[in-house]
Image (cartoon, rainbow, N blue to C red):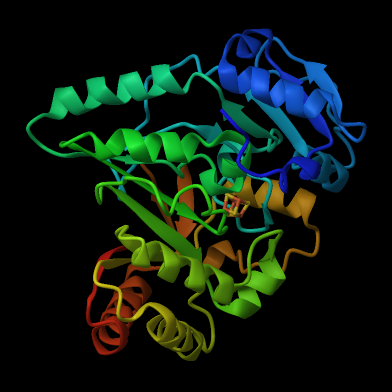
Length: 346
Ligand code: SF4
């Protein structure tokens, strides 16, 4: 397999390989690519879950170094986690992301190990997908590729999304979806996707993107990427996340929906997912250590506490405010995005 683009390779400074990963074509390819570079330190690890020799302090430096660390490994556990409300199962092609969003949903689960992991045993992972599809047959089974990563951020290195998209095109009862803040679409737009993969673009008001999302694409580039993807015949979507229901939020998000309408309003199959801001105790602790001046609204006193599907509690906006937001977004989407469908607001 040819590496799709060289542009993201120079992002990484430390690249770890599990020895077994070198038995796979992708592992070999990545090894050839990185071991030939003077600006990369190639290292080895027995497990992608137990990487040693990383910068550990201070937290800001450790975080920045981890985001420039890539681990090439073999996904051993092939029990996929559930993934409500967007899909039935997670599809683990990668873990972690080179982006540095302060409100990243991975702060809870990755904690002090935010390095980027890519898995080379894609055939075994996709074989497992077949088993999950069979178990639920004749019902459709939906897999989410972005539950543990922004998979498009590492696509130029791996080509794993292209592989998955072509695989799902052949699955009458399987559907794939992932969400992204990037636009490395070169290898995807001309694929035979069969309409079985929905690509969604995660967006927010531009001022939140500038303030909280270091290393991601600006809003207008994401919207244009969404348009190009829709024009290539893919079902597409926008995910507005995280939504801050603070003073003036109506004006901010009404403007955002109008911008979406300007670029993508005529796309025939556009879904809208709405995720209000939430945080766990663990995420808050990690965020405070890594970004002392984070500026995120995390006042427990004005939030409700709720247990999620993985057993940990999170601080969410109170139910009344969520209902108000739901009504408001339904009105805006009805008015400006009449061809769209709201999948959920949480
Ligand atoms: S792009 Fe997504 S996965 Fe990557 S850091 Fe930002 S929120 Fe996290």
